[in-house]
Figure (cartoon, helix red, strand yellow):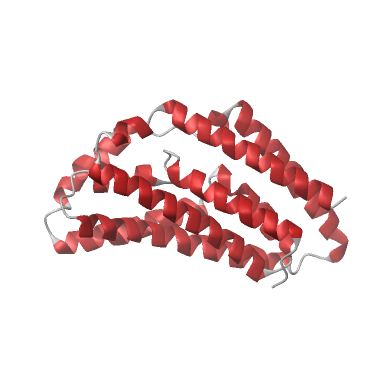
Amino acid sequence: MELDHLFWAAFQSSLILGLVHGVNPCGHSWLVLAPFIVGQKKGRKAAFLTVSFLAGTAAACLLLGLTLGAISTVIPETFEYWVDIGTAGLLLLLGAVLIINPHLLHHHHDEEHGHDHEHDLDHLKPAAKRQRMAGAALFGVGFVNMIIPCPTVAIMYGYALDSGSALKATTVFGIYALGTAAAVAVVIYAIFHVARLLKTLTQDWVEDALMRGAGVITIIFAGYSFIAHL
């Protein structure tokens, strides 16, 4: 696989945005998982639920990368330039929106919703069978959460459609999934051991700052992509 400059830029951006996505207190990330972890007494059960959720996220990422990368290989050469310029322009616009108004495309978490899950979980904890069902459910949630995209994945979508390679596109989505998994694992581990950390991480300013940071990274990548295609 040829490591062209645009691929390398997308690779690095995806890793950083994966980490941002993993820390971000939103419905696409650890906030969905936290109610299942808070109150768990055994680390093995917490780890099983976390891995289930992250496996769903990774599976969706790889599927998206493979699919979009394959689509990029059949885009007619006469349209490639305009597709490249168009996606770069949309990424610039998206990055600006995330910086100016991070709430517009990415709503804040709902703490009450989380508490409802936590209450429902009281019925899941005792039985091993229900524990497995919770793991399967979290795999599904992780998968659907990636299929319904978060703004932080815009770079991967844009690059995948420009890549002309299913392998490169899948690699970029895969590194995003790896970054997300690493960040979510660290956050969940911290919450498991320090429950009061949950309240700190769910403050509104945390999500605003992270989404604005994602906007800056998106603009940098889009500008680089735009210049590369001129």
